[in-house]
Length: 164
Picture 1: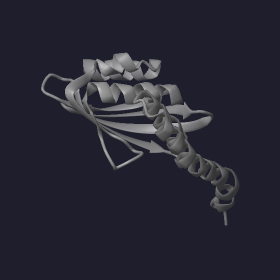
Picture 2 (picture 1 turned 60 degrees about the vertical axis):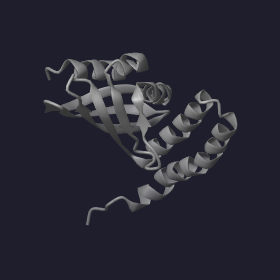
Picture 3 (picture 1 turned 135 degrees about the horizontal axis):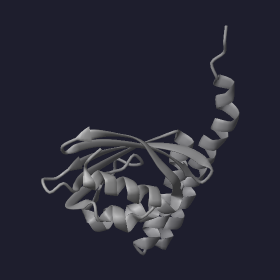
């Protein structure tokens, strides 16, 4: 890997440093979330705010695979959301100046994603000065988070493939 922006992005992620990650962003950056198709985050300020909230929820990030060249890169890491193991893939597209102009996130498994959603949404809304909506989103995401964790602990072990 010899791209300075990608190296800086990776190092910022592993440190949980949203400000350093924000310095890798193009002025017209767009972030596509794995959690909603209802809207996208645009501009360095919005994306850095999301990253700040994300690094409060996601920790122990360690990139294990970086692929790409020129203006298109894919990065993969293992991390944790609370006590849940998380794996995320990132598709990054760079602008002519070599800064990140588009970020698309993909994550797994579902219990970790619901943990991320339950953690990031309320934090973002409080930062936007919407504490009432933050409480509502917290209440709305709580049952989904509880259901996915319960299913992972109680139902999914029963669905495990069996040797014949």
